[in-house]
Image (cartoon, rainbow, N blue to C red; front, side, top):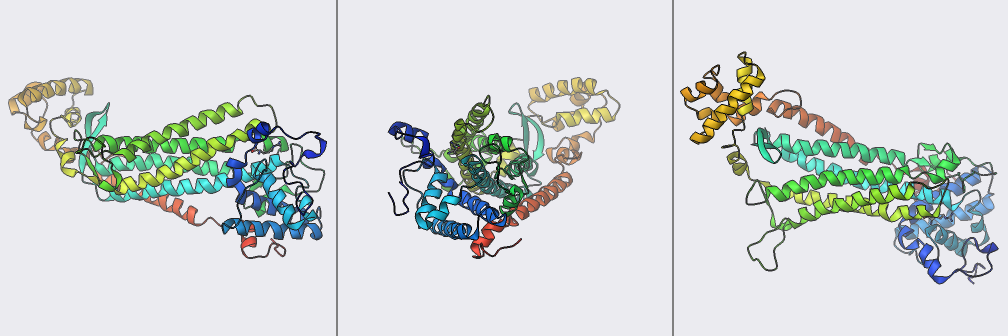
Length: 493
Ligand code: ARG
């Protein structure tokens, strides 16, 4: 027994039980080991709950004030690293209540009025998820910023664009890098949608049926900086869409990062030679002294698979669960945490790798020759001179065969050979078949022509500035601001 008169090892719900919990079952069902990371967010939610109860007259100041002061002190000590979440408690929520009661005595026992661990877990997890999604979004923004910066220097660096991993048509390196930036913009949108879906407060849903006290769920939502509260108390405690939205958004971001990382691995090979990775992001071999391996990029590629697995784990966790809360839902946390951690960490690694990537412009240029990359230009030229595209395709195919036989570029084909295959071809087509000219000609919207790329760069930059502004403009929720300014008891809104 502690001084407060509470047996520290007894659960919150001990009243109706005659024998202690089996030790294996106790550890098996406990979640403190992994949900302790929710402590700050639960303390904030508990502050909002207590504050709302006081405003509604459900708790008198006599009980509410010591609760607010006690929780606030705990939050301060947690933030200062002076208080560790440890003990025999079932979960972090239980730990908070026990610690509070130990500190302030009987008033602490009133904190759980009109709430259940079901809505309590939900709100803490939602607040935590939003904070971590902001971290992941900062990573996405950081990687986009780096790639955008690189793209701006390479509007006139040319390389082959590939389909089927075969050289296809010439593009600029800027255009290529902007393709990755575009994928990351979709990730940012998905991550922000997940952030919004986590922004509905379940606090006040109780176990499943709300409360008989005159509570104000909208008020606690506002105090927590959330735009709305639940509309249905049963859905509020059963809903894990926000967990899945976040896990999926992380998985997609990592899939995109994985595709980019795969390219780094491929491009850093001797066979491609399009990039050189600085030593700071490369590793050696224990046996082959000459080796320099892109291991960080490989691990980055590998990390996405666990995020994909977490989405599958979460979907199968929720599928078939009856309304409302079921303890299975306790298993939502580790996959979600793993996805958020993995995304956050992988993006930091991706930014480091991107910054240590040097482009081998000469190798890219060399790859433009020998592959007849501008054969489509020749066909388009013939189309402009009245040849139906299918016929032009056929004629250019024959010209490609002849050029390959003679070991020359298309634009070097002798006149008679060119005209034998493509009777409508005119002399000026030769300059149009040069890679730079072909890229410049591809000035259709979203295409690789330098002017189009400039437009893309501008649009991508504006979207990124908006995202960076959104991240920087995130304000403390009112309850956190009041805690920081020590006016939890006086605050009015
Ligand atoms: N620790 C649980 C979880 O993580 C929350 C507790 C709800 N448990 C309960 N018996 N109502 O989901």
